[in-house]
Each structure stands twice: as structure tokens, then as C-alpha cells.
Image 1: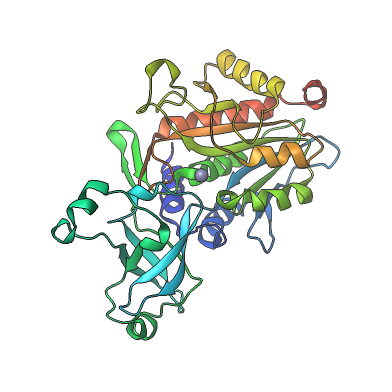
Image 2: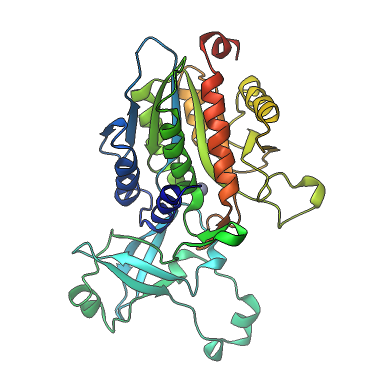
Length: 359
Ligand SMILES: [Zn+2]
């Protein structure tokens, strides 16, 4: 992993870009690839990265990674100046109280706040026993305002504005551990950008378009538009996917940190084309690139939309394992990101029209 790649990962993780507000994330990818791609954008905040060497008469491969992250939207301001909010995407709600957040105001500034948690001193015995969080409507963000008027006038707060955790990216280089937020799917966005760069100089039997798609966390809405526009014949979907190596029974763990990208045979939304999936796993073995496979009992991703909407275009998911996705702080490893890029590049290099038809 080069300094350039690490900087992009850092900036992408720190970018404040929940579903519907992807601007900061896609601006970073646009800037990273503007010298080698034709870049387009639509009003849903899907970013299209078109390889300059595309000829138009080869099968078209789409690389996808979603640009959004799970986040929040301000719902209303309470009389005492705290902010009610709704979720953009599915959080582990129990992790939210006490989380530092940033909330965009009417001037576009990001105001620091905290998701309020009652000090134990004020909790009843019943509340202490429960500890959990009942519902989003019981949670508020506190920016230090003392009234609704102060929140609006001095802090510039208004409803409909986005908020995200204030988690700052940190990389422990000696141990190759990254900590931060939004690795789902910004580590995938970084892998997509690096894959496009590594493909730049190669002579390929496929055309390539990269898409940083929007609003995945609220139901794959960006990808369903992007796929119609790109009209791909085959796709690789990058993800920051949930690592399971700290949960459950050892025999059933399938997405471990530092074991390479995870390719899912299926999740709740999709059965990834089994022949394409096997092709990629065999290639990983042949080239000595670490990779792992899983059969997911939950989850969902953009491959479902691509396979279903696009005349059944085969799709696989290249997932960089991330511990604790959909919470304010995740953990992933640089070597898994690097292996995902290596495997994606090898896959693209080895695809051609007859192989794709065989899937
Ligand atoms: Zn997610």
C-alpha cells in the first residue's frame, strides 16, 4: 500500500457522506482518478469513471463500490435545544449513545455534537437494568444549545440535514490495523480507484467502467439507476463486508481479518453467479492471492441489483473484511485491501468474451 493509497483511504473514511449526501466521498474518488478516466455524475450522486482505452466493441465490465455510509438525518429540534434524528441505513443502535457526531448546518459547516446518554447517576434501577436503546425517537443529539431558538440561530441547525459519527481514521502501520468509520464501503471505493489505476496501462479484452454508487445503505437505490446507464455484461462489486471472526463458533467463521477479500456465494439478496465466483476463487489460488469464501445468512448488496436488472449479468462481491460495520468505529487491514485490489486486477486481466459467455 503506497502513501497515496493510504491517504485516499484516510480521506474516504473521514469523509462525511451518508446516504443521499455522498458529495465529499465522490469528490475524493473523482480527484483520485480524473487524470486517467472520463468522469461523469448523475443527480443521485452516482459517479461514473470511464476508462479512456474503452473501445465499445468488447464486453463491458462494471466495477462498483457504494459511496454512501450509514448516517443520520435531523428530524426535529426539541424545545430544550437537543436534536431528534432518523437513521439513514441500519445501525447497531446500542452503540450510539455517547457517540461524538458532526451535524451539517445551514451554512454547510459541520457542528460537533454528541448522541446524548443519560449519566448513570440519573438512571432508575429499571433503566440501569435495561441499558439498551428502545427506538431512534428516544435518542437525541446534543450540540450544547439551550433552546430550539439557540440551536437554530446560533448553531444554524435545521431539519433535513445529515449527520455522521465524528470518528477519526487511524492507521497503526507496524501492525497493519486501520481504525475508523465508514469502511463499508469506502475501503471498497479505495480498492476500486486503485484497481482502475492498475488497469490503466494494460491491454484488456474487456471495457471497464467504475461506478461509485449512491444510497446503497437505504436499499441499493443508486446502483439500480447506474446499472441501467452503464448496461454492463459482467460486474465486480467491492464492499466493506462484516467480519465474523470475533463472533460465534470457530467452525462457522468465514470472514476473518487478514485472510484476504471475502467472496460470498450468496447472501439474503443474491446468489452470486456460481461459475464466475468459482473462476475468481480458482484464480486467487493459482496466483497465490489470499481470499476467503462465505455463505452469508444475512446481508445484501449491489450485486443483487446488477444481476437482476441487467439481463442476469454475472456479478461477484469482493469484500474487504471489516469488524463492526454499521457502528461508529470499525477495524480493517491494509493487506486485505491490497489483496482485494490484486485479485480484482487479475480477474479483469483474465476475462474475455468467451469466458464471460461460459458463466
Ligand atoms: Zn453497509
